[in-house]
Length: 87
Image (tube, rainbow, N blue to C red; front, side, top):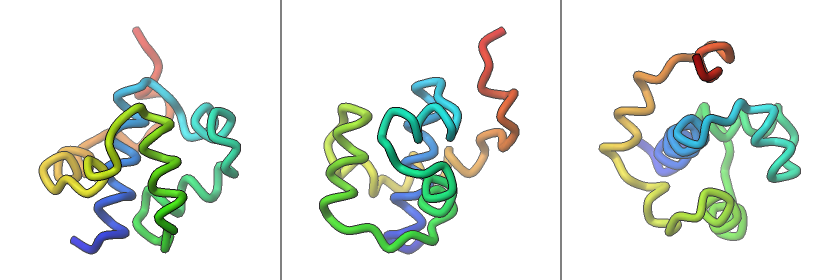
């Protein structure tokens, strides 16, 4: 996996673990929802500043956004928004 893919998948993982939709995460971070989608698909060439910002938004260390094991688990997450709603 590329660094962009790792950061994207891990962003998705931590967003999901925090029970946030892309829209809710966009509101929290002030990123546009479309940009979050680009990040999570591994197509955003993020600056170090944005990587730090994303990590801080989840209260994690930036290095965790490069974890391959978590990224692999993120690939198995549901893609539908209603899968994030608590039952």
